[in-house]
Amino acid sequence: MKSKWYELLGVKVNLFSMIQLNSLIAEAVKLNTRWIIANHNLNSLYIYHHNSQMRTFYDMADYIHIDGMALVLLGKFLRLPCERKHRVTYADWVWSLMEEAAQQNWRVLYLGSKPGVADKGAAILRDKYPQLEIDTIHGYFDPAPDSSENKAILEQINAYQPHVLMVGMGMPRQEQWILDNVDSIKTNAILPSGACIDYVAGEVATPPRWMGKAGLEWLYRLITEPKRLWKRYLIEPWFILKLFFGELWTFYVYKKAYLK
Image 1 (cartoon, rainbow, N blue to C red):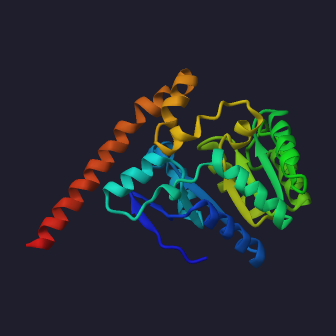
Image 2 (image 1 turned 90 degrees about the vertical axis):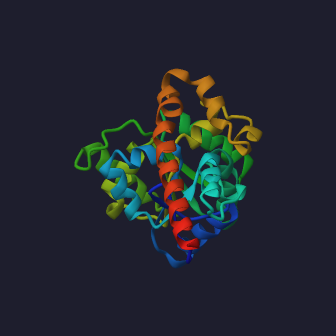
Image 3 (image 1 turned 45 degrees about the horizontal axis):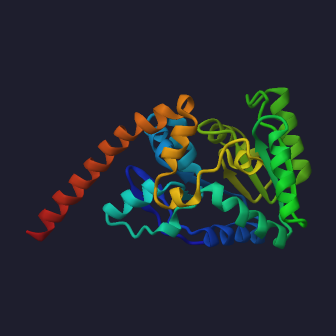
């Protein structure tokens, strides 16, 4: 699928809706190719600008969608054609994706979460979509590329032959694992998906969906998990705002020079 790249705060993104992302996976399956479909939010932007391995990962990604209303709003301020539909977060997308997987007979494998949590989430998804083929592997293993545990994980993945591999280990561990192992993985779509299955399993409280649409999901998560998330939501955004105002100033200067 051809898709235009947009520059936003020093990173590249595609403007995909949920329906377009499902179609993208369908195309990868049809072509029997392997695409990394990454995503960006405020946290990933901060890590990207401070972690060279994350920059390498995003350079390797085939497509990058927006996961965070804040990025959509910042993009709109910077005159990008961002709309609310371009904010696709896994707490919402997982249901549409699993429904599509059930209808299209895609095999899904979820790698990540604590032992038992992914199994619980998968059982809930199977109850909702009885035709869904989904298997899980917990994320508590030695991720070193040459470790015996990691090699066993790769063998298990390739034996299952998933059309969709979801890697939910949190940033930047999931991106690092994909970067280290992508050449050994047989699948069509690789999705770094964070705590997706934890939301489904009820291990992490899902914010009211109106808060996500209003760009306030961060506030709910900060209130419910302050010890873990205070830095992400109270410190990191200042760096993002610095990038934003720098880009806004550049836009203003170039626009003013052009009008002359």
